Image (cartoon, rainbow, N blue to C red; front, side, top):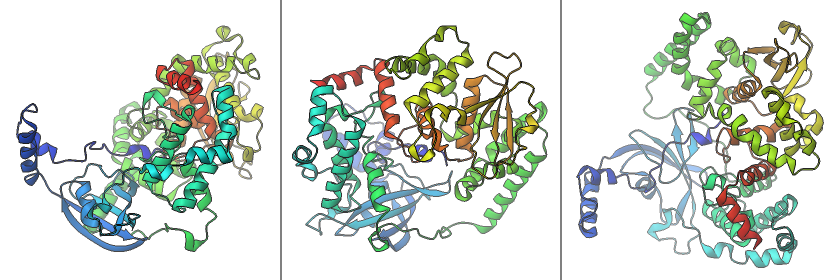
Length: 545
């Protein structure tokens, strides 16, 4: 499912939901602090209590499954933890996607929420400490000796910084391998989130030029490890190491999903029947102007069912469009579906690509000798030609991965290809294309300056053709949204290019949907520098000094 990690609910930054009781009392925030605290504690006694279903695991074994009545998430954690154990993972059931997702310990709660709480043995020597189950604070001692370690085993990194002011990608990869090996040696194959946060913070403290803040947000180490989504260079390296572990060395194993307590079988059947009726109705409604409102309403009402089906069963693109054929003849439905998935970010590409991103990429490409020629004559190009030129530049800045066996020059053909004017749309999928994978891509019927030129999305393996009535920027926008709506993997030849487009859509780079190539972060950083991001420039200047 596309941006599943990014669809987390809003957080209570204080972790004290009982503050609402304090505010309802109408207290003056400027009164004496002692009086305010007295009222706050009094308000907590009258604060709304929530019934929460929590399943608790110790060492991956389910030990309890019962309902708790609590004020907030922290109180739930305290009630479920035993002496000698600490919180390892906290997952909350997301109704939109019908699965449990990782959340912060301060996440807001409501009645009948469902949680899974994973506990591990406390590393605290005083196992009977009642605070063992509280969220751990990063321990500075966890990462002491990082600079001597680097000086001993990777001294060239400091020489690179002295000469160039930056760290090359090759050296950065060596650094990640080195520090993760040291982390595993000290804390095992499954270090806690706090230990990874501490290491990430120490890396950018020891090597300041590796600090990256997009739009000035975050602490600057999230590309090494983001605790909210459990992603980053450190996590990727740890996961690669765990893939080679023996079964008895693995901590996490899949558990069979059981029907949740409190579900009403009769209501479930009724809801399923209503959803099926709506799906059948939309299949039969003709895509006309008078039926458009009914089709859009039906798509909205079946959204949760559709996302759950696509996420859990991973149907092919052809199967998705067979169940929801209106996507094919009303491409605007991709916009509304993506807009719901990504919280109102559906129009960002159309707004930013030509006005902001193209000038920034041009400034970056001019400095690259091997692609500087692609920026020549840009003023004389029409909009579609300029967009195509920028897509070519992107494939050079973010080349195909080695396993794709694709050259940089031909990578663009996996995004957009051309056929002569007059080519019949119905003939585009007549060839036998099932013998090799062919991800969906754009096809231009005619040249950019052809007055009757048309773009179509074509998926040869599923024999899917979607005609578009838009320019190239709009066509790329629809293709990107199709990958997210149908939960398709990006083409390996363009995985880094599509990951960069996520940045254009302002989708968090720590999303769990796809792991990010280090090249993507490099290009984003360069784009931000060319955009004169004052915060980032200050960090670079400090690092060089």
